[in-house]
Length: 107
Image (cartoon, rainbow, N blue to C red; front, side, top):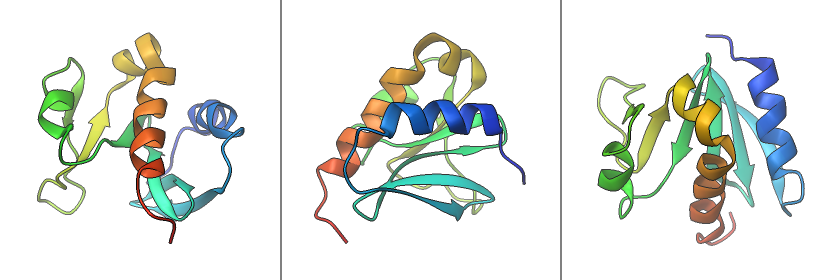
């Protein structure tokens, strides 16, 4: 699956000040890693965000989100964020993923 290059560039710009930023092809899209831990990524025209298990249910309670089920089973702690939510608050969603990844020990 291809990913939206323009969305990926916007995410990249938001994360560029972060130390330890890298990119990796994952889940048929592009993942953004902080110190080896996935923070978020782009699959198609959607954002995937690693919110963590403690924030998972709250994230699913927000509009335009759904469980990330790339493997056919939901990946707990990961959500897909649809285009409407990206348009409303891309910065906020990227920050959520960056905060969670930053809370993990470096790999």
